[in-house]
Amino acid sequence: MIMTLNFFFDDGAIDKMGDAIVANTELTATDFGRPVFEKGMREMLGKELADKLISQLNLYGSYKKFPDELKKTLFISDIKMKWNKETRSYTSYGKIGISNINKAQINKYVDGRIEIIKKRGGDILNIYLELDANNWYYFNYTRGTMLAVSSNEAFNTAIKELKPEKRQKDGDKEKKEPNYNFNITTAAKKTQFLRKTETKEESDK
Image (cartoon, rainbow, N blue to C red; front, side, top):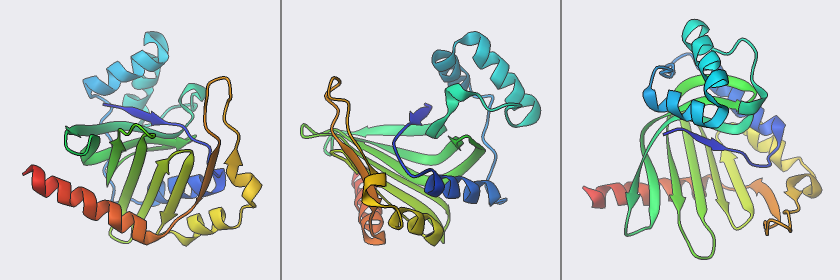
């Protein structure tokens, strides 16, 4: 499927992640001709605009002008997920295709793992993206708090140096949204997530 994730975060930090992926010349280009991608784009944007943009991607490998409709924190153009009954979670497998990060056009595959856990007390989202063994990014969201950490110290520093009030946002009370904040976490949390999901995969086999 395709997946869009839009969340309040520091643009400076998130743009550093996009720049790092764009700069990595070893990563494979995404496939724009997949029927699932074309169908998803038409459902999101309408047939006329989607077909125009898909044509540009196939001709030039990027959009001639980035469409505001696709400005998302993270737009994933290719991801496969499976349901685990025991953990009540969806977990991705295989490569993850990234279309864009904010307005930065990426269009590359990375290694990684995304997990969505269904819980009565609030769903949990884990995102791990790996450019190579030494370059990775991890996000964990639960109950109004987004935690993040990376091997990229410039990404971490951008978050650490923000004043607390710049890292929080009030939820929409009419929509019963919780207040939201983001902060730095530790690499140990990323390691814990990877070990847990690897154990799940072994038990599935």
